[in-house]
Length: 251
Ligand code: NDP
Image (cartoon, rainbow, N blue to C red; front, top):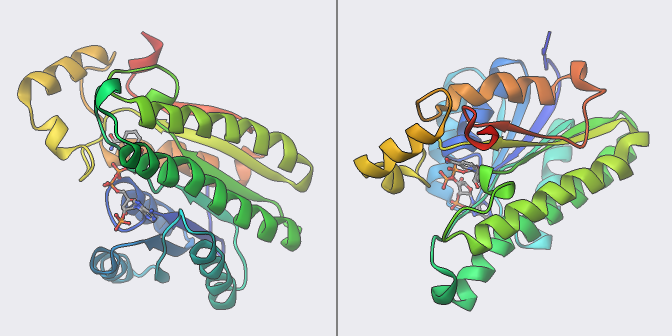
């Protein structure tokens, strides 16, 4: 089950953190990998790391909030690999600030990456998948804060809540094309984005206390759920956001 031999997976934000972890997971299952992010150095490290494992990798500098950048990435992937099968819409950012301190530039950065970017990439990949007429998988990487409010998360929670709605709308629109669209919402996972936040011992203890399983998540915790959502075996599963959070949101 869950074999992806011959499939092509596009992963935004694939240069580090969760995106890189997901690229490893999909590579292990046999997929060819097209990773993208803005920082070329990180991207090159990630390309080398994945290539050393024997995976076929195309690494492209892309800004997901820029339509031309996104469209030329897809053209390049199709030119190189001939098709697209799976999109992991993962690139994201966060700024934690109380409501009254959020500046216009904070709001724009988070919304442009996490919501506009997800839309632009999802739209461009959907066009390609429809043209190919072979179905496909779109996986939007959400967050526990797409479902619960949190605190100091105005722009982030708004972006992830919006993303969860996109997941449902796209699932509905693309179902007859054999394309499933689902969200995967991790709990706290130690990555470059959350490292500083999770290094505070008291905060870490507080977060662990809020999970049912009494620990933070690891990249490996996302592999099984991702493999399911990316696989041919999940063709009756669409429009859902799967919370992989140690029980955090179910409490
Ligand atoms: P990281 O900060 O570690 O990685 C983010 C990735 O996104 C990097 O590759 C970054 O590269 C890329 N990126 C950011 N902005 C853009 C852009 N405009 N265009 C292209 N690429 C971009 O974050 P995480 O791995 O922690 O998070 C990944 C996703 O998982 C995010 O959507 C996040 O919201 C979500 N998530 C994370 C959780 C966690 O605990 N870590 C929990 C729940 C959800 P570059 O900056 O070079 O472009």
